[in-house]
Image (cartoon, rainbow, N blue to C red; front, side, top):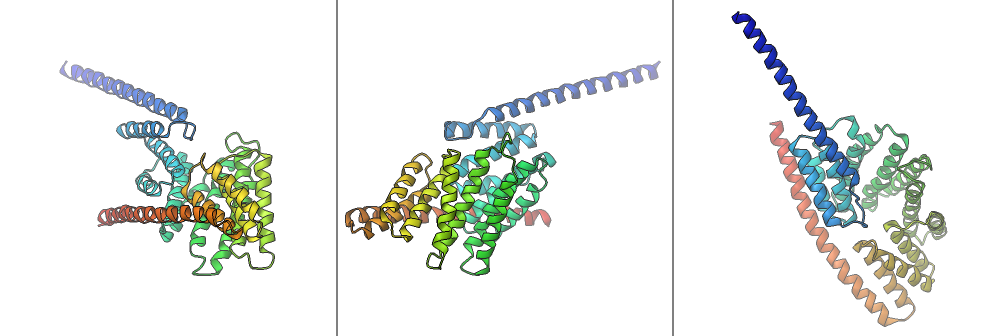
Length: 358
């Protein structure tokens, strides 16, 4: 009799445990689905209130952490980094990416991991941590090659190859062969972008050709840097005109267009067509107000100061040179502070890894 009661108790207890676990799993599934839905509904763009969006994403990241939902942590964290990228907050990108890179959410996260490493590599490169930047770019490419969707894979590779040129660009004065590497990876980026189908639902034709156009602009910059070499101005103009044609054809309007307008201004400065320099630099300034970026703004000021000086307009030349000098100094101070903070983040992470390995 006792044995029967005991076994009956075991059966009932097992049933209760299974039922409780089922309820727990069901609740967890409902929570993760709710988080996924909220993440889908959040718009990360300058059309929405950025501070509210950032707060909502941090809340979702916190909710995901409480229930151990790795995918939710990564996805919300990645979206926060997208906001930081728009704001040029390189120090914040490095701090958050260093945390997120430690999370393993499996193969479904290959795309997010590729973009995490890519964004972190770019931020590191901007702050002068070249070797750490190169390491993360290589890891980003490894993850990108694992992405199942061929169009998303090629888009992610195109971004990674194009941004990897920052490493060689930063070091091109140390080793002349690095300039060849810039050309090589810039062209690899264009080749990967051209493989994307025009009708892809997410990577639209506008995104595809916008990326190709930006690569043309980057190639033009390389030629403008050595404008005194025969044929270089002509090649720079070819790439800039091709980039401009793409923007006109697809009616593109984004922060990369500011860069294009500034480089057209530079082109005409080299050609000594100073009225066109002013025309394109002012177009860049007007557009930059919509997509604020001090690096683009300071470049516009520099071209305007040079053009007005060449035209003998000392008043406007001084006006824009003063604006240029003030903003340039401000950028330099900010970069120094960000580099110091990021170094501390990297050092702390390195020390934690060493302690873990001992």
